[in-house]
Image 1 (tube, rainbow, N blue to C red):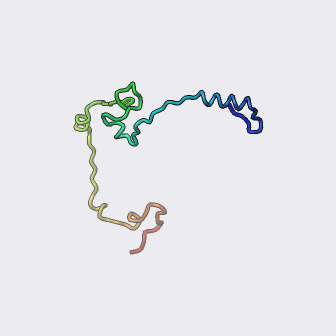
Image 2 (image 1 turned 120 degrees about the horizontal axis):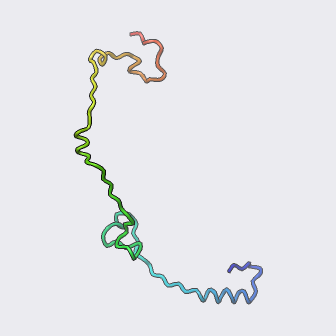
Image 3 (image 1 turned 90 degrees about the vertical axis):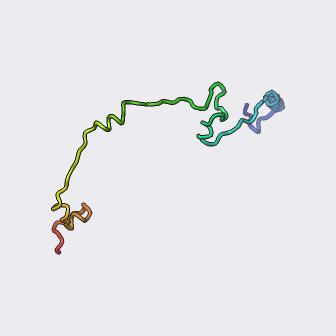
Length: 106
């Protein structure tokens, strides 16, 4: 019930007081957990009493045999000729953009 400050009469005040006295709150502090690892530990305070732990759901996914797939996977190789690898030009050593239009003298 919301009462405007300038419209309070004795009946409204009595009704509000009676409503306030009728409210009963029974609460008790519960243990708190501040991090995930503590909440997941055995014996941690439960979030919901009907559950055996604080894990809502979990899923394990497994598809195939990684070791066998990696062992049988095709491989690729590349080689670089020593002539092109040893020749460094100014535009190969410089950033790609902006690329110089003429090679540097030297």
